[in-house]
Length: 331
Image (spheres, helix red, strand yellow):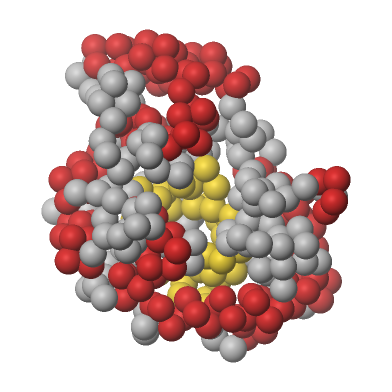
């Protein structure tokens, strides 16, 4: 039987990295069975970044059999000026070297570098694209007006335009729907959604008080407090959602996946939904859930009611580097 999903799937390799880099999966040997399971129906796609595992995520992927899957990666501005011409070119070359022959499909600017004029960054992106360093140019975590500004600059100069945007999107965090998604549709930019399970929040384990070491809600990891602060205030509302979901013979993880596939604003032409998974069994369930059909109407209504209760407390979809100061760099 052929495996099909309405929206394409991408494996998120943010949890793969060398020991001591905050990653849960620390060797290629440990990660290989996970990729094997994800690709058991054929070649897929893998999403990584030079930021993940402090660069070691790309390196570990290069040691693995990715089953001819495409690889997308990103360059994050950890310091002001990281998207300047020389540093951006250096970063791209370093990612290519780390991936060892796995050609980059999408090369993303992972967040805005406010210390470098967009024109300077985009000129180098165009040069790298024309040199064949990657196939598609993408943006991640930018504000919608910045997307429009970047497309305008690229068109004006005849440079490669961004054709993919990677942003946070899930049933309880939909802030991209109001302005960003219409902007992407207007500019013919595909969406790649990350955190479709809200960093594991929608697995239901943390809501029940079960926090795995190394998970996104682990207090000892850098992102642990971030996810706790972002989603921790909606535990009561999501617990009510879980009750409805479970009354219909589903679990919250399963229902959230099916919402992304059939009830979100995503379309089949989008790049895909980025799912993680630290065990082959996690990935196997993800594949199964993605192949299932739409949700029953009462469950869908419960998702809508839950989101209406929590949306006012959500931070916006975009993300700026920690060093960014609007008083110094502007908006």
